[in-house]
Image 1: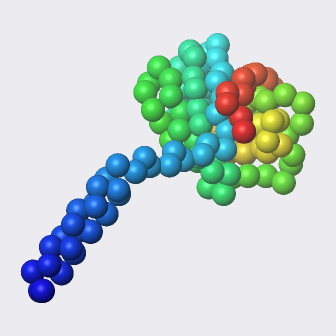
Image 2: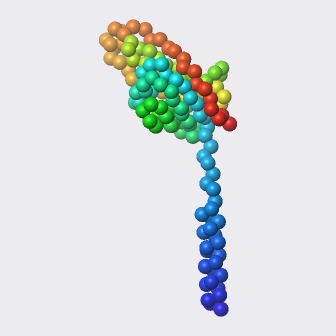
Image 3: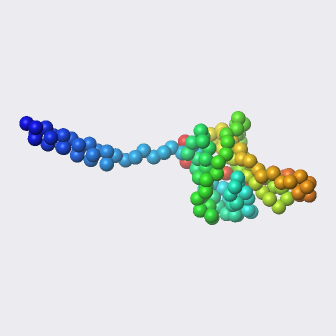
Length: 146
């Protein structure tokens, strides 16, 4: 009797193992995916991005960490969600200060969100010598937005 029970337990254990081994893992939902092209070198947080084509994805807006893929391979960019709602079209906002360009914001119109990024501050004397700050918009094409 004991051997039948052990045999039954072994069969049940193998059956459960087979079910769990064959289960297809659920794919993580992506909050936003996009692509853009940079015409010149730009700083994004601590990363320096050369001109070229890029794709990116954000897994969650709760922790807005971007996985960026481009000429330098994959990189991670962290930011913080703002209260400002993105309207119109999706874009990167680039600040130009003298000879340095930095991404300050990512606007994602299809989901109505914006992510802000810090810009390194230049010393006052350098800032005055560089002249005024100008802004440009780089269009972001949304990919597979749900």
